[in-house]
Each structure stands twice: as structure tokens, then as C-alpha cells.
Length: 137
Image 1 (cartoon, rainbow, N blue to C red):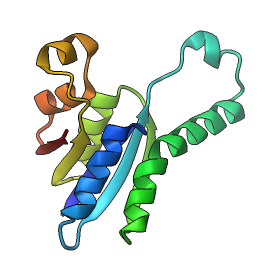
Image 2 (image 1 turned 180 degrees about the vertical axis):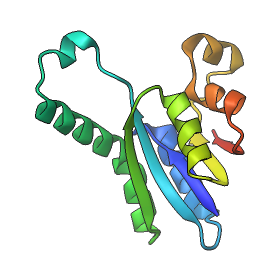
Image 3 (image 1 turned 180 degrees about the horizontal axis):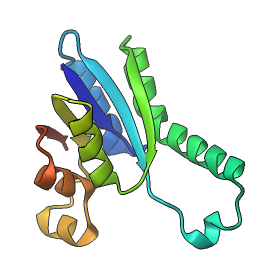
Image 4 (image 1 turned 90 degrees about the vertical axis):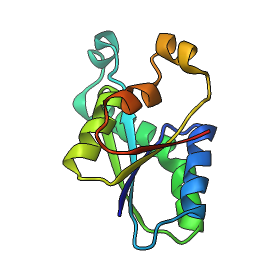
């Protein structure tokens, strides 16, 4: 079973990682994914390519840190991906192209109405993914 665990470094994503560890499917292949939103052109215009790449890597690693530690402490081996783009769209694309069986996501639990106005990534993935999504609150 291939499982995609998108994370942004928040406590709700750590809760999703702990849930996954507790209910780890035998033989599971898990990928931690962080999708960083594109920076404003005014910011990127002042950075050289090497500085921008370092910023992206540092930012992505910071977002993966909690979930990485949870999986490692439980003795689980996983893959990692760092991407830049629209988080909802990238999660859906990675899950589909990578032929994942399940997406496990943490939710802030804001409720449907607030999520619609705030543009919740979980809502976007639930609405558009053909891969099953397990939301942990």
C-alpha cells in the first residue's frame, strides 16, 4: 500500500503522522510531502537561484521535521518530496501520478463554512482527488 502524508509542520499534521504510525498498514510505503507556496515576485527578484533553492530546502525540511521524527522514532522508513506550487493541486497530482492508494491529512477542524472561505487544502483535496483521503482531526 502506498500512502501519501502531506505536511506543513503544524500540530495537526503531527497528529496525522501519529495516527498513521499507530495504524501502519503492513508493508506500507509512505511518502512525506511538503508543498511550499510560490513566493511573491518582489521577493524572488532579489534572490539568486542558489539562495532561493536553499530557502526552499530549509523551509521544506522545517515543515517535515515533526512528521519525520514521529515516523523515525516508530522505526518506519519513508520517502520525502519537497515541491513548490498550489498545495491542494500538487497533493492531488502527486497522489495520482504516483499511484498512491491513500492520502492521510491532518485537519485544523475549522468547519466547512470557514474552510470554504479560508481555502482549506483539505477541502480542495477532498473535493478533487480520485485517491481516497483519510482526514485526521
